[in-house]
Length: 197
Image (cartoon, rainbow, N blue to C red):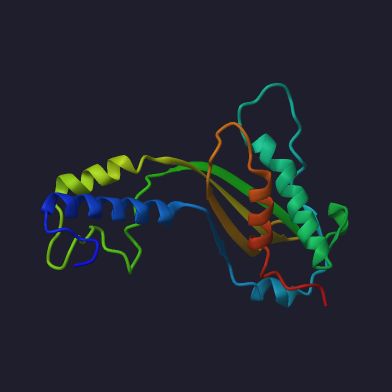
């Protein structure tokens, strides 16, 4: 009979554990959603600059953006240089790089838009747990802090979007930035950018 029991209580517990594992797996790690690079690649641009100046540490600030800013900029610069792009003064740049950052909360549940995931767990064939069991599973999958960064490439005037990537990740430690994780996410986010020809 496999891992399912004839006892409905045990079957429900197994279903709840499966739901929890699925929900946590669905929201763990890093999600990278890049745009198509065709528009950017067609420009043939080779030089870039940052649209905004780096954030300076001015006194005490609890926002993690002051920790994210230098790591993100260095990671983008390193990846762009590896692809053959040159960072120049803004007046000489063919395109501009900028980022937007936001913090949010993930509810810890399977996204409703996932087409291959049911919004309710199935314990055995034709057996669906009651609403209270599902509610408990959602309650046990506590909300988690998330961080989202969008890296964008703009024309030299800063008005036309050439390319963007959205990087979202769970925040494991509210007091510090996961430097290696951010560097890895930037590399992954910029993976489809074509090298300079």
